[in-house]
Length: 261
Image 1: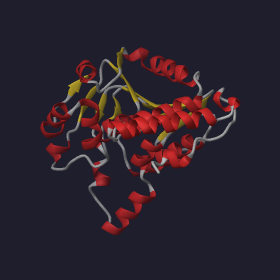
Image 2: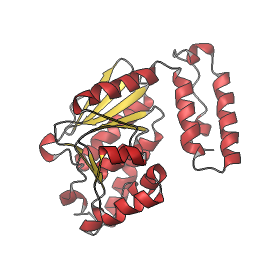
Image 3: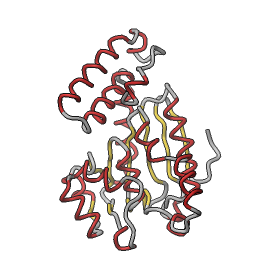
C-alpha cells in the first residue's frame, strides 16, 4: 500500500510502520491525513500477518504539532461534517485495531498529535519531546478524545492541569506521570520502538490480541465483569487450534467478544 499524500506505510516482516509525513508543516493533522490514516489503520486491522504497529513522525521537529486549524475550524455544514465524521472515524478505528500500536514520538506532540499517541497502546518518547493540549488558549477543546484518554492515562489532576492551563511538559515529566513508557535519546527512538514491536510480534498473536482486549475493555468495567471478561477470553483462546496459537492461520477470536456483545 503506497501513494499516500501525508503518510508513509511500510510492512516489514510482522510490523506495520506508519510515518506521518508532513515534516515541513510539523506533521500537522489535516483532512487528507485523516483519510490516509483511515485507509492504513483499516488495512492493519484486517492484516493477520501484522502483529504490531508503530506510529512515528517524519523530520526532526515534531511527531505531530496538532491539527490544521485552517481546515478543521472552517467547518462545512453540520450535516456534511457529521457524515464525514461517521465515514472517517479515525479515532474509533485507532481504538478498534486489535494489534498493539506503539507511538514513537519526538519534538512537538501537541493537540491531535497527543491524541494520536494516546490512542496507541504504548508510547516511547525521545528526550526532546514536548507534550501538551493548547486548545484552551485557542478557545476550543480537544475533539478527538483527548479529554477522555488523557485522564485515563495520567489521572484527573495532571489531565486537568494540561487541559485547562495549556501547560507543556517535557519527556521526563511525561514519564513520571505515566504518559509514556520509556524515554530514550533521539537516535535510539526508532530502534527502541522496533525492538519492542519485534518482541510483541514474537509471541502468540492471538494471546496478544486477546490480552490487549481483556485489559483495555476491562478497565471500563466493574471488577466482577472484568474478571468474567477475562475468563471468557481465556476460554476463547483455548478453543483456537494449536496452529493458530503458534502464529499460523487459525480460528479468529469471536467477533462478538471483540465488540463487547
